[in-house]
Image 1 (tube, helix red, strand yellow):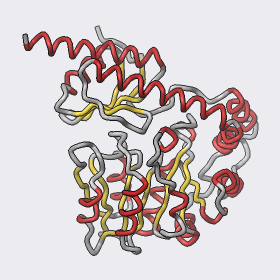
Image 2 (cartoon, rainbow, N blue to C red):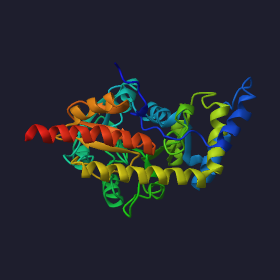
Image 3 (cartoon, rainbow, N blue to C red):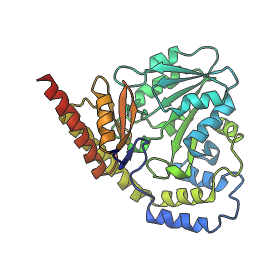
Image 4 (cartoon, rainbow, N blue to C red):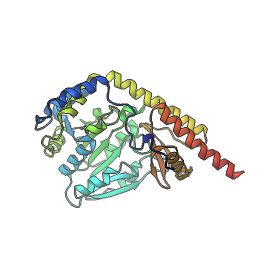
Length: 339
């Protein structure tokens, strides 16, 4: 008999629903659902700019970080241009490149799961217009440190836009984290991409934003879909920003569970490197295909890349304990088969 999916750990969603104060704001906005939202999300843009402590002309808002990324590509790419990115990475980037008429140039990850910055630079040609960095990286959770990022940006030609996807930045910890907003003045070809889908738990509402130089942001805004950010989403984001301290505690809980999950998996014999996202990455040559099957049997929905690895979203404690039980069985079976 098929085991129903009990734990959704495939899409790096938050395990927590919106806070009560956020739900109340959403309900108030629903009462005005017969009214159009703003033609362009000017109020929300101003609120995000104030929160990020940057001028309003440095902020572009879109339908999730994916929407802002597409607006960027539409602004700077012409048919036949190239978009360079690591692979594996967020699945949407090759799709977005194709939508913009660009050629996708995938660059293999380094053996340790990091993005190979030298190889990314070496992949540039005369048609390269965008290079994508995902930091922390999806799906491995690896981090490009402050020094490495600065060195990389200094080597990217000014006519190539750097799309720095920081969808998971709130979950990153450590002394080497880049201060990316501080880099914007020095690098007018940099767009820092962020989202309210992950740490803020608003994935269904589709709001993301980009931070960049005024000239770049102006070009991106030209591709803003009219009425593209609905009033419920706007209300939810504003309420979430007011409840930032509560949400930070939730993020800290996810980070603590990530570290517990990683340590327990290592103790079971899985080779799990430290990560900085809201997930853990199990990579081959560990028995990832067997692990994926065991998780499915246990009712856990994970992101399985056959022959490559498993990305496991950090869930609540019960979900993570279910993961540990399923993967412990894989290791026990593997050990028994060797004796």
